[in-house]
Image 1 (cartoon, one colour):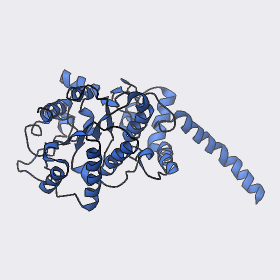
Image 2 (tube, one colour):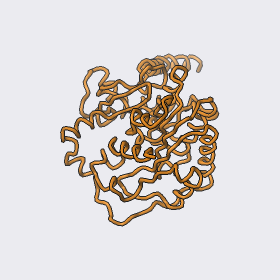
Image 3 (cartoon, one colour):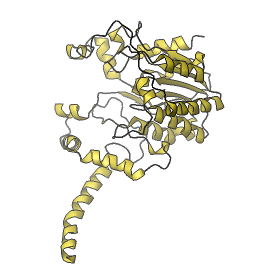
Length: 335
């Protein structure tokens, strides 16, 4: 039996070490090593990364030098809010940073504010972009694109975090096209469907991502193809509302966020996004947000309005374009 086990290990250990070594060397999800920039501007061969992990780790890598004191929070919908434009409405000493995450939740937003407060980071200014899906979600996230950054969690399970990425690396859906690309150096059509993204511009100092590829297509009049137009479903002319979602657990998180903002005497604005579905946030939820954060700090753009009526304000039915963010920022900082 002893000889059998030794022989078995001789067959098992080399492949395991090979796979582990290949994963560590390639680090496709960029969760193992230090990176001065997590994205390469203009590259067409990027792999979608966990934006929360990128935002958190990039912040840690740069805070000592940059001394950030102003933050944009939100999901991928917040990425269209330009740091440069926001800064026009801020004091001269503002040092802005995009602290966004894909599929942002109230749970993770709360963790980010607690994290920054615990680190003694100044929160002079904040622009918080929310919607119903963010407010309703108070559980830790899962999956390689969304799992919460361990730096933000109390007693984070580092091994479980890294196992998420090793498991994703070993899945046939990922590893086969990924290794094919690495060996061939060619981006094949089926790879784009699997995980490759369109070119972007990335500023590692502000952690700002811009979808320049879509911008150029829109400018050239080639973006709204019949295939993309098919995504823009017809909306009802009646105004529909989400059901109230703020239970006790949600309110406790929101109360802690409000307390941190008050502690720092933060100049903050909370924007309820104008989404293509034109559903309006529940009146009870909006009223609670106004009561907690101040009526003057809540800006509700949800529902049927001039922004949501125009499909050209959207890339697709989930994300609105920078022109919308610009108009919102200019309007809420008008006075």
